[in-house]
Length: 119
Image 1: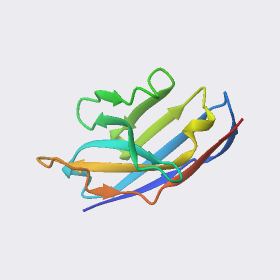
Image 2: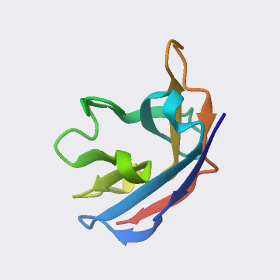
Image 3: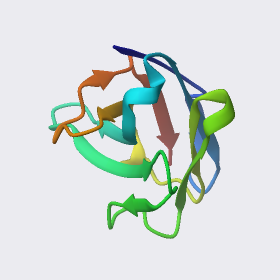
Image 4: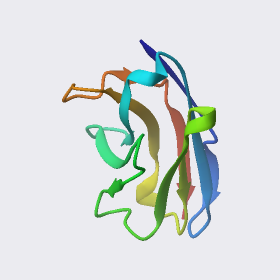
């Protein structure tokens, strides 16, 4: 099993930047890819970005393309999300998740970190 711990959330003004981190521990060799999701009050959890653990290829939701960058440090089992040009609609609890090899769903989830963007 993989354990995930997010850090780096906070309060920022619109147009500002924040960086999130997600540290993985446990059976990290089983990770195929990792992702970031977010959930705003009253809304369903939505996909933000993902990165393959081996090759590093990334995928982004249209709403964050060009503003957010997902990266990883395999040596330290850590994934990052650099968020620039933040908008009030980016306000949400951000979760990281890990998808195991040969599985279709993200099975391990972090506890979440709050990101609040003021206008």
